[in-house]
Image (tube, rainbow, N blue to C red; front, side, top):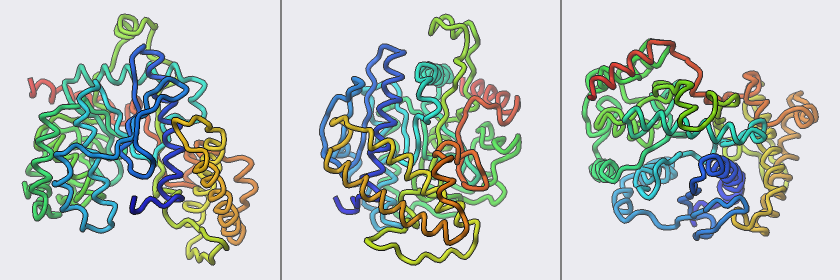
Length: 402
């Protein structure tokens, strides 16, 4: 349980699992299929429980035996959380299920405005699973401003063979990566990324930014994001962008789901960029003096922390399901967040940002959409960000793979 401090790790997990339970319930109800929430997390007691929404919640304290020895090279890297991040590969091993939505715990899986429309969200996820199945790929993800694959959200079709291949690559990881030649020292991006990979057109029809540098120097290239891109898009060529998956037409929706077309409310997720619950949080029995050299830092950091804190507190305060949260821990988290809000308000007031206005008018979701307050992004995979070029390239890639 080393590193399981309440404020930055355990308490945010209760917010995450509440949202995961809601999303799993939505998908289960519209599909009439069993959906489970799996947490590989040693900061809450392990076991299997059933939530009040009839969702199986499985907390795993043990890793697949193949993973334990291969993670050792990552334990000595800085920061120490690096080896934990590599646990994402475990999702590929869950072959007792058909699809895995692999999500970091710094994401909001079912935003407040979408919760009344849970049926649409569940249907839309079923449509995304079908699109992935039809594509023939085993994984779909998004790029971001730095990385051609953001590891915060990936949909997998689990594969034992792919999992073991990744374990083999991890086993050779020590000394097997550098910023010029990447994983397995395979070569520079322009030389080894397949020419039909959608990263070549993921920047408005142009190559992703990391091709310009022609180095493996994007965020987390040496850990999860670089490893996942290497395994899914370079070494095995079994992954693609969510936006490149083939769309379903109205006849597909009618035949598969007995609806006239895609649901009105499409699923979308928000990612807590810079971890408002973990980084730079003023905490303690008395509020420390916090110096913020740039006014923009106040808006991007502390206003965001307050918005997240308020939403998390409202959510966990209403969370009484014993399958999702321990009552004693719940009270402790609410106390910690209350103390933190007091400190955040002091920082905001000192920099002429009215925390009362924020508290009265802002929620996590509404703040996400305001660039003057946050650096964050909302993923809406159905928006055609790259026009027809992405679809054309994806189609060519499918033809090549055949």
